[in-house]
Length: 96
Image (cartoon, rainbow, N blue to C red):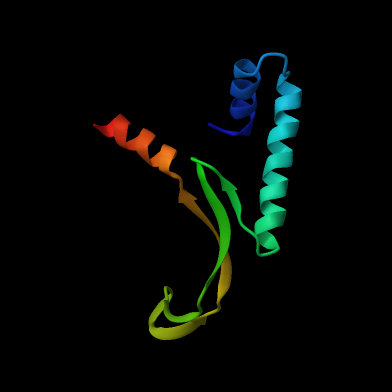
């Protein structure tokens, strides 16, 4: 499901909300989550999950073009999502 399909589903499920309004809400939500975790914060949606940023340490790797050559891979900040209890239970119920 992409952003447009998600907006259609939200508009269909929420009475009185147009597809355009749903797209704007989704865009605002993603912007707020991005800004918050970029600033070092955490966004928790109870039962669904938590978004945060985490620092991945730099390490030494192998150059794929020349396997005998070692390269230094720098540290980087990455997005992290931890699933909440309700989401985990919903996925478990689907597989059983």
